[in-house]
Length: 424
Ligand SMILES: [Zn+2]
Image (cartoon, rainbow, N blue to C red; front, side, top):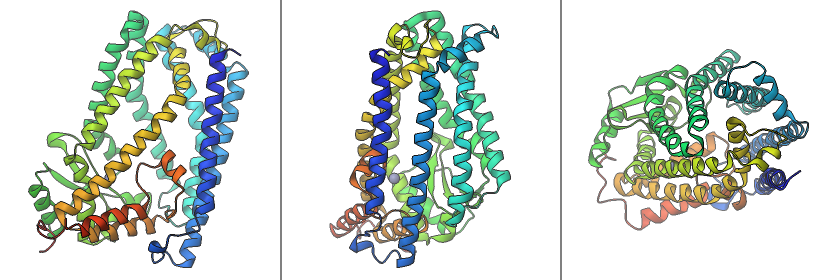
């Protein structure tokens, strides 16, 4: 084993252990619901929420230890040179060999995940009453995801491999450009082409809710072409809302589970929060961060591609572009892990800002609180997450902190004068 192999090995083990420790701390505190949130769960629901968290956590532990163990076996029993030799034997040339080998490894990985996805959906989610999906829908979802992944991923992968194959390490800038264009393109085609493959979108019917949403969007200058209701209830009882697309294709999507279970005030408060993310440029900044991150990644990748010790660490005798890509992503694990902390913290800070924006512009602070409470209640959320678990995993702040911040905002007088849409 060379020093690169040690770095990758220690990083993979450390990451798994860090997650297990965070989960264990989280489980330990889960039963202790904070005073201010006691009214949210009955004693029975509190127990159910802890049981749900326990079931999910235990399944995650089994899956992550098993996949780490199998990966280490694959690595140390020289799986990479074996797959490489096998695929090269087909005689497809360097680019297609890379595409086929990466697809093959991808299939191995998703096959390993499949039993856990089945168990998670049809045993755990089912037992706690969240699951609404059928086996047929579940399997069709898989098939469609694989086809969409192949249709989008294969050309992109082939392009990146071909660039590096022909232009050597100087190809990183071209790859960066292509991938950024791809990211923007995906943002455009996902709402209009891809999501309708999985769900049905119906325009929100004319009525007071639609009128109020449109009126609110207008007061804050949010360009909104249409509002859709998505049949989220086809798969789960959990509710959500989001918007997607650019310019004219921008649309707001409400889960039917949200529209049916929350009051118009609550729905509007959630949307005010979502539009806040847009108005405060969180979406644009997130995209800029992703673009910069991709550039740095490709630059580092270009340095790593022909780096022999990286290939030797995985028992490869030759340096291939596609194996360089895979090995580099493994070597990058610890950086990714560490970058996760500031990025999640940034995301949590954005949540507070979007909440404050929603209170200030819609005056619906109380509705936002009750909506958040009901979303947490219906998903049996852990009301007392451990700070380390939050720092490691959560893009959203814990409910208690969020409610406290919102109530502070309401008291500070955000609500009231600018209350333009809350009363009909
Ligand atoms: Zn948000």
